[in-house]
Image (cartoon, rainbow, N blue to C red; front, side):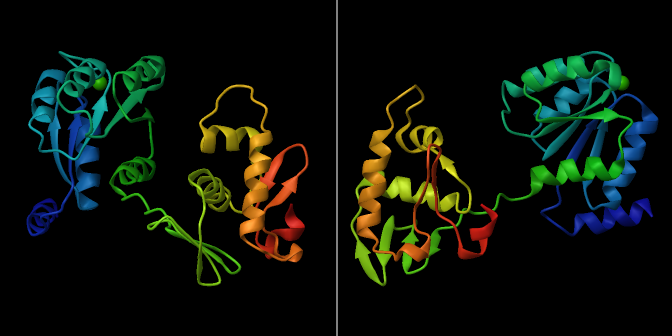
Length: 243
Ligand code: CA
């Protein structure tokens, strides 16, 4: 079974390799077998120093790191590795009473941690989070006859291009990205104007009014709606009753 798994893996060039740095043989073998059955390639280091050497080889796509290890401990390995490798994901596997230390480990550059005992399914889920490609952001935002093509930073109303200032565009895009959610005036100031202090936010109303003039929606079309004293929202008709 084990040999068959190894052979199968060698046919695929995009197999992800996981380094297991763990001194308890029972745990490392359990992880190795489980991960190889899931199609990963693995290697084990049973102390911190060997773990660091192997990690520094750059051959691994992810590292499972125990905290208490002979030689360098998990936090020390992580801190050392991060000097030359800022990106390879590191997941700490840690006993309950070392959780506080593990949090220090996260500060030293680990990406995640799991408390022992953990379920293999949960570990697998955490591992896959790191290998999943981020979803591409949408580039087309539509609301009725208005279409924003963010790849071109272009706004259209019924097939005609509408010229927007940079801030008008940014504000409209922010409201569309958060469609069906209220955007507070504070959030708008922070995200669109990069203003993080108390500020008279009358400027937002000026831009909202400009957008309302440039896109001649009917009143019933739910373009930019004012939520008095709070902020603004663009919502789909089906969300009308919900907010
Ligand atoms: Ca240990």
